[in-house]
Image (tube, rainbow, N blue to C red; front, side, top):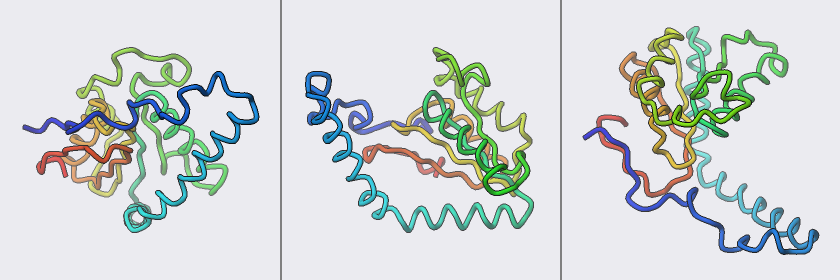
Length: 181
């Protein structure tokens, strides 16, 4: 099967036991708790530095070869990809075509939740086809749980077209079939 599954419930779907009573905490304690949780992130990112380096090298190589970078996501993940892509032209003085964000449900989904859009794998594939992704491009799927069908539809189509594909997720229990790696 080429279905991506999680062998256990994704931590992204779980409540953080340390913040169960966040709404009842005094403001100062709530702020301290949020900042303490955020402080744990750099150590986790440092553990992924080799993977981060590889993705940056792949994207830089793609740019040198005339390729593009695409972020693909649904909901907040899609919005963050679109936001990052939209910051690249003014920050790095590059063409808006070089880094692009694709969000399930299209532009409307930037402002309003598009129920069901994230579950449409075919739409993810069509978005890649519409943008003419080729083997020179890099497609980065962003999916907190790692199982979003729209994202996997895009990654499958990008891989079929020879593009380098990357998944950014936060689920250590993800089971990705060999054919999709």
